[in-house]
Image: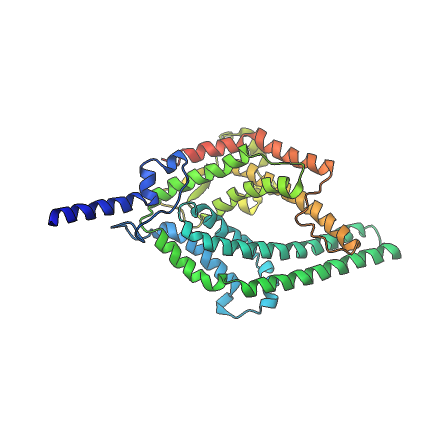
Length: 381
């Protein structure tokens, strides 16, 4: 009876191993573009190695950085002032980093979905409050420019004051809403659990496997932007949705902290030579064009910085367009003294729609996406 029992145990162990993400990839599933899911009979594959610190560190560092912003030095910050402190600390950038990694890896490890949703809820809520803050700042800047040539007459001054007062009220209301959400949120308490979940999920997930998985997923991010259908006659659900999908690419490059390295090609060696004209421009100096990448991987994937410039430029151009349209809409809404939420509006003028399409077509015609996809493909093996 000993031999049959041993054989049965061996078969069960093999089945459990084959149901892990890594085993299915070795069998060709993920490489063929099949959905990646976390099917496991046991908590970990039999005889799996412990999680690679090189891999898990990319996520745990982002968790730790947000924890510091959320509770600096373990302090008990007032929830009423939390929104302002997070806005001042640009914490939304850090939330985007963490969300982008969870968003990518949840395809292989569904157990992380709970935490991704928590992070997204806080990021969305902070985004709503940030919009109220930015709308007020937009109006102040608009009126400062308008009054630069001379003080406004009494009627215009009264109108400007009424708009600013209305936007101040909306900012105060948004602060209260954000505070209420943060009172209900369990993200702060769940960050240590997320850390543990990462270490558990990535057991046996090797750096080489990670490189293959990440390059494949980044390829799909760009492929979605290139092949997706976006209605550019709509502001929020078309133009801005296009920008949202494109923006994940530079955010992920930044978030991976060294798995994706950015190289400076020699003059004339950029895969798209026309993009070299962006050198020295505000785009080339932008934070996402110069990710710090403090922890280079043992075997990184490398992309050309000149190609990243075009992605960042398109993201910024459409972002400025959206800010202008929604900023002006916020001023108009405050002038009419209504509570309409303009942050999700699809309204745009023909001129604004044309600008959005121009930015999109510039990206497509540059062939930067295709060149980046080609470089990422070379990292899959």
